[in-house]
Image (cartoon, rainbow, N blue to C red):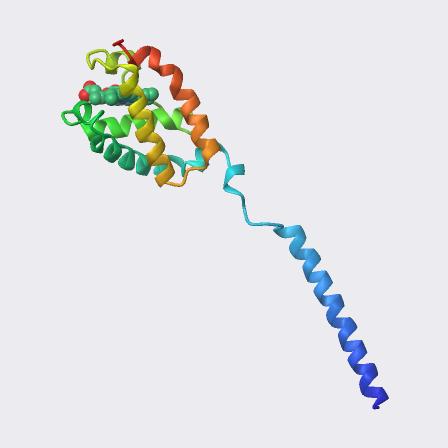
Amino acid sequence: MNRPTDIIRLLLLSLLVGVLSISHGAMADEDPAPADPSLLPVFEQFGGKQGLDELMEVFMIKLVEDSRTIEYFAEADQKHVKAMLSEQFCVILGGPCTYTGKSMREAHEKLTINQATFNALVEALQLAMDERNIPFRAQNKLLAKLAPMHREIVTEP
Ligand code: HEM
């Protein structure tokens, strides 16, 4: 048995343990866990204004793919509707935007929309939000704000 070597090993080992515990402590202070997206403000969970613009692209594709809604959007100025929806959702979600479009009553009064058609549009939006990986609770916050709008939009029994 080589005693001096054992003592040097012991010293090195305790030094290593000390360094590891200090660095671990520092890491714990700085960044305990990866950021949880569901803790971000709801507007950020949608990816900000850019994320909303991208969501509208997917949303419009869903709307024209659905036989219940295509007739409404086929003849519409889709680019304009997407831009207005993005502004409107930005405002609803607390983002730094101004809505420059028409009121919901004015935009839809000539379109003869019933509750089933309204629900079809909400389903298309849910599919789009899923595809964009928007957290479930953030989706629900937006949907809860849209639901009362049926009073201005649905005009048919
Ligand atoms: C919560 C539900 C809805 C919201 C938030 C919404 C929002 C909007 C917005 C912001 C615009 C643009 C207004 C403007 O031109 O200034 C618009 C237009 C339009 N919406 Fe909706 N909408 C909803 C439901 C629906 C439904 C259920 C339909 C039919 C399926 C529909 C069909 C249309 C069409 C066709 C236009 C374009 C009208 C035109 O060409 O003037 N919307 N909507």
